[in-house]
Length: 328
Length: 102
Image 1 (spheres, rainbow over the protein chains, first blue to last red):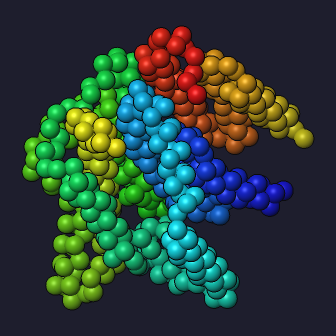
Image 2 (cartoon, chains in turn orange, green; image 1 turned 90 degrees about the horizontal axis):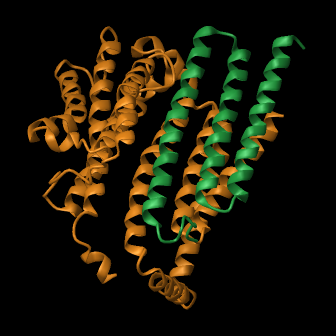
Image 3 (cartoon, rainbow over the protein chains, first blue to last red; image 1 turned 90 degrees about the vertical axis):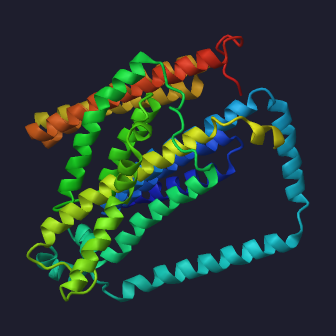
């Protein structure tokens, strides 16, 4: 019976992914992508990876969903007057695609084939070795936390996690680079909808509480900094959409502090460990649990701030006069 | 099968029925407003029944309370988004008399 559920879920995930790529309209692609993200989250739960499932649901269906919907609105606003125009453009593009030279297609096909072979080979390899599960479980008492996933993420492989926090910050910097330096210039289209504002105000403390819960429960079970960060980031995004651009009103130094606190504290801690004679990110077991909680809290705050800033900036870009739209 | 299990099964089946009805409505109804109506009304009711069934199955007061709150938050979020979508549609396509643009 459970195998049947797994098979249905696997087929559903692949089907939704294909449909999302092949859907004729952009909005259909976006909504199918949400469905794909949720199917993937369910698949992760079936695989026993609840941490990944929460992250998948929160990032793919939640945060990316908000970004996609925002992008979709920009497209639909530019499309409404010239629907026929864009349709003609699209047919022109597809006509061009069918006549495209064979070389790029061949390269793409070869690359994809190679990628498929490599991933197949990687999957083939796993059953032979036992992996590092036993080792990770054995070292758990010294790691400072009780949940193996958190131990791996914040203790054994802390360097990877540190880089991941950096990647999100780099993404934000890239958006700054593309969007120009006039950031948070003005509040984004303040939604004058009393109902929406009330609901957002209602959900703000709820989301905060739930994020804090996920952060703390990461010590003993599925949860942790990234999951909490998405929820706290959702607060920022909702407040932004409701007409309270929190990021625009706080002073610049505070913004920068919030954005870099996670990355900075993590690195500072690493250097302190080196100064104390340990390796980078080698926690002394006595304080490991406490330090990990602080690192996770600051990381969650920084990631949440970065996600909010990413959304706020992207949401703002379309406010600039539509020169780009007329040229395309 | 105990009486609790029987009630759980009945609640879950009724919940699934409402979900099915809501999905059918989304697929078959002619315009956006009636589709929204079908989706939010029927699915929220269906979710309520499924939540009640699962709460009964787990039979722990704390879990039941959490499940109840999940249902409550879903109700709030889905009715708000329904309202926003409907409002956007009405403002966007006033001259088209609420017909969905395909």
